[in-house]
Image (tube, rainbow over all chains, first blue to last red; front, side, top):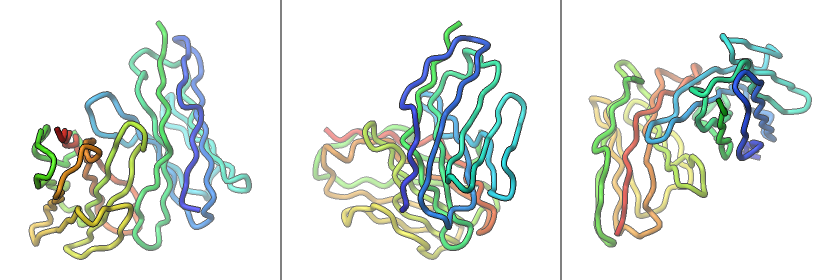
Length: 113
Length: 113
């Protein structure tokens, strides 16, 4: 119930294309869904987050789509750039209680120039 | 820069030894979370402290312990180290329950030889 499943494990996209990473969760108590971006040797950096009262949130080239009934959410990166090459983690937490983040396994994204 | 400071950045030690990792949260953040990141396990939640009190425990081994001090910095103590403890250890902080946003430090890379 505490798991967050992320796919794909790795993704190669051409420059200018759309990168899509998917996550699914089981715990209906989860009500905060962030995405983190991690470059080699660095800590995860908060990229964008969504709460379940909206179905989509957009910040620049990054969009989260959220489907509460399916318990799924996804990250879309529009006009993908080589600088977007990194590992992306989805996560989920419940705002009540400890609010610890449960992470997906990560997706290694490579944008080819 | 997330504002979360972790020291040391790198640590090499022998099996059986004990080490202490230190984390200074962002100014004003009361919650500190510790995570372990290894290649095959992703980001695993270890333990959370809120304003000096233990708030939640995850997959933390009995050989590991942590504490948060009155000035809100936190230390993670790892003892009787094994080769399998080699990993990146991240600290994250958030300002108070109900916000959800957690900001990660740069991590401590622990190598046990």
